[in-house]
Amino acid sequence: MKILLVMSRPEREEFIMQKIKSRIHEIDKYIEVKILYRFSQDFLFRVLQFEPNVIMSHPFNGPHHADIYYIVKFITKCSVICFRTEGMLDFNSPNHIKLHVGEENEYDENLVDYEVFWGPKVGEKLGSELVKQKKLLSKSKIVVTGYPMYERYFLENKEEVSGLSSEIKSKIHKYNKKNILLFVTGFQGIDETEECKKNICKTISNSEDEYKKVYNDLLMTMKEAEVWREKFKQSVINIAKNNKDTLIIVKLHPIEINIISSLNKEPFKELGDYKNIVYIKEPLPMNELLSYCGVFFHFGSTSLMEAYLSKVPSIYVTYKDLHYSKKFNLLFFKKFPIPSTEEIDVTELEAFYYDYMKNGIDFKRYNEMDLAAYEYFNIKNNDNNYNPSKETASLLVNCGKIKENDTIDESNKYLKSSIINCGLDFLKIYFELFLKRINLKDYYSALKYINNINVITKLANLNNQYLNYFKLVLKDNTIQYNDNEFEYNKECLNNYLLFKKDLIEEITSYNSLRVLIFGSGKFGNDILKLIKTINKFDNKQINIVGFVDNNKEKWGKSIENIKILEPGNYLNIMADKIIIASQWHKDIEKQLFELGLPKQKVLTANYKKSLLDN
Image (cartoon, rainbow, N blue to C red; front, side):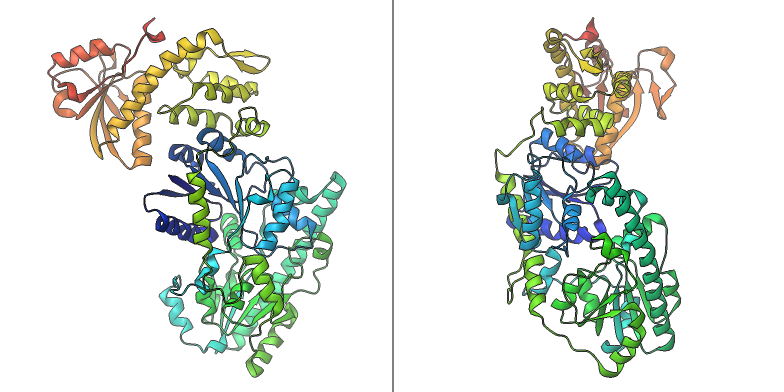
């Protein structure tokens, strides 16, 4: 069984994925588990190469998020699980719910097999909307497991994870706990890209006029929030300058870290100038930071729940002059839906600090917080068996055992649009990867979906003689082929594919190998690319020591700095294997054997009748 775990925000998700991977191996140590970053350049190639039985991914709540997964499910017949990451959802805001579900008609109920939520009320609200939009077959596909990051507060043998540097720890230990203030920022909406802001507004708008109004409200909200951020920053600096016995820890929200890094922007840069301010812009575990601090400040963060579980008093810092957020009707900078120990305006922050240092503040339990712990995170009072990563792992393993799950039919309209959106890159990957195991009828189904004449022109110019066997014909901007020629051409191509399969199995059985390629034409170049791919993804050391060719005009020339050599008996000591990459394979075999090369060194394509022989 193979299970693929996909991250979209590694700074938030890698720790969770590693925990789930460990739990899977506790169930069955022989299950192969891979963790991939969704936006890596070669993501589709690596997924198709892995051929998973189960994929767990981030939610498909943005334009074209589902495209690649349609293609993968169509090819591999795998189960697709969405792992939801909503945190504090505003149940009373239809727009906030819609934002997390995405626009209608982005994908259908055939794609996702299960939706995994942290809490039951979040699952009910979002799950109902997913079913309503026909993105989920039924509510029976909703699974609630809890939030893996929080299980460290409940497990008897707590898994402590230290992410703090020795320098930060040394600084923290110089201060009394009461004198350590922890702030977690929450201003990520300010620095989002214009494209992201527009997509948010499109998702929650029902008309062009509404979109313009919502977009204007959002921009005004962000301008007001910038003032909020500046007031907060200045208050922190003032407290630090005037109170050397106080340590202030400012930790960026994980999404802020990602956005600021990508934009090369540093809105809190000045904080690093003060010895009693620790400015953290790396994803570190909150439980460790909370264990050192006397009070926790936030601007509307899921971390509030961690402070509650750690029994640390929490202060919600608002901004009274943030007017547009009330009109915008999203959770951006709106009143947070669950209570903190106290709520203050950002203009009161310095006064609150001095009152806190004089009178202190006690941690309090609230019925509303206990209810929120259950509704949002599936946490029940006195539940020492809270283990979301184990429950999630069990679901994935059980899905992998299902022999027949919902598959994507080739007539599915979303599959068609997905292939068109992924374009030529997908076709090249599909053709190259499935040399080992290709269903040509499926391949033609994919080709027929491409109706962009420019893409088809590029496809025809791939200079791939094996693909061109099929004599693709343009008619009415679609690809067509002759059924009568299909089986004949399929046999020709299959013999080539079978050789590639045998070749892959042969050379990947070695960790290192010296190889000569006999034939410096198109086929020889294909073998070169194939070996490079094997080296890259299988961590092999297959060294191509040269090309060999009977054409005297090529001797001494190079292909990618690899010399083309004259045939001779010296080849026997140069290489461990010689791969024949030519249509004249029988003549070359005989030639090599006459030069004294042993049969076990020679790998030969086993063609039947081929168009190349014509």
